[in-house]
Length: 117
Figure 1 (cartoon, rainbow, N blue to C red):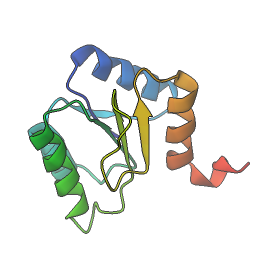
Figure 2 (tube, helix red, strand yellow):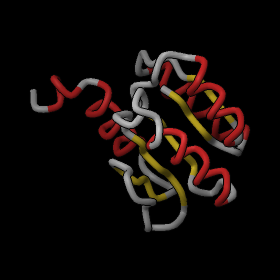
Figure 3 (cartoon, rainbow, N blue to C red):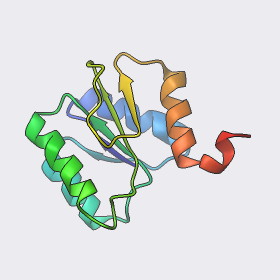
């Protein structure tokens, strides 16, 4: 899972939460690092994208994912203080959000076969 978060402490918090869910996070603090990670690693199962990144960074990450046939299927979950989600995302978390909401969305995306059980 790729976590794109500009704030160091939040990025570390998300990484810790994901490890508790047995998810191996790859972290990026800006678009350049995120796009490089997308190109170097196997496609992530999910991208968690901070909408508070500069607009050009957000657009670069979204464009890199949606324009690449190997990545276009990757679900994107955005998070930020605004209620408007960018187009082509599967979920948007309004900050501050509850841990239960975070885990429910991510587990449903990571393990869809278990979501209805």
